[in-house]
Image (cartoon, rainbow, N blue to C red; front, side, top):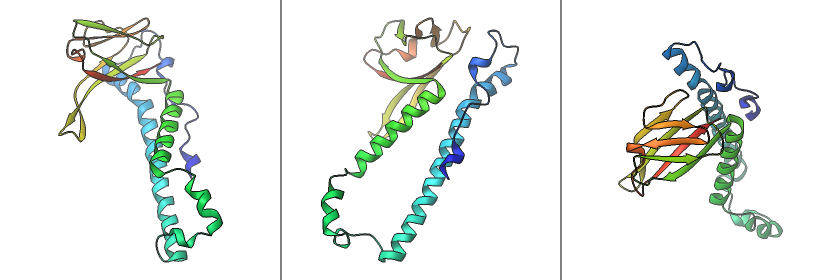
Length: 189
């Protein structure tokens, strides 16, 4: 079921491009979008399989127990053991962390945040030369829904713009460096 969604290797890696690719703008955009699109399809497939599995389990519970499993239905010897296994929120956090770490290793991606300092430019140290960097300015809409109010993309050879790649990370300018504001980034390597 889930194994069908493994990505043993990306079909088109940015590292496989020559230093000076001879591609049109459209071809280059498609190349940059190909690996995230593969990852998106795989994650969506895992989610679809998980939803199908959840439906099957719910059906089994319904047929076997006539609805939800209640504590009184569980053998008394196992109740204490189950109580020590942790709550659903902790499990969801652990699974989300594991998926994020696995995706970062698979993609060669590093995600993080930085705080703007209000200057005309601000260097962000990553410790490696990124292939590209996406920076976003997440803001809260009514305190509940995250929205992106400004975004920037840094690519090799680009020396102007709000995100510029450097030998040790990237530099942000203008709208992506408001004093005290926290920004998020995704750096591909």
